[in-house]
Length: 65
Ligand SMILES: [Zn+2]
Image (cartoon, rainbow, N blue to C red; front, side):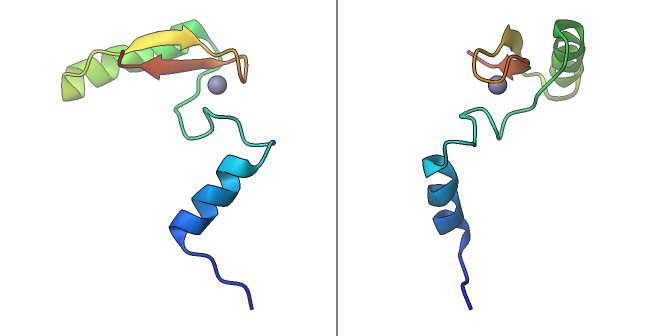
């Protein structure tokens, strides 16, 4: 039986070439969807997020920087 705890799983995922560095981020198909979600999060949580086009997966994410 092989049992992995959470940190071991994360290490394996980071080494995998099939997992993108943005795999744990929110992802959106379009810029409008990302911007719409950013606006919602700004209202609900007061966080300012910016939509950006990801060079890794070709889709859109939100960044707080
Ligand atoms: Zn991405």
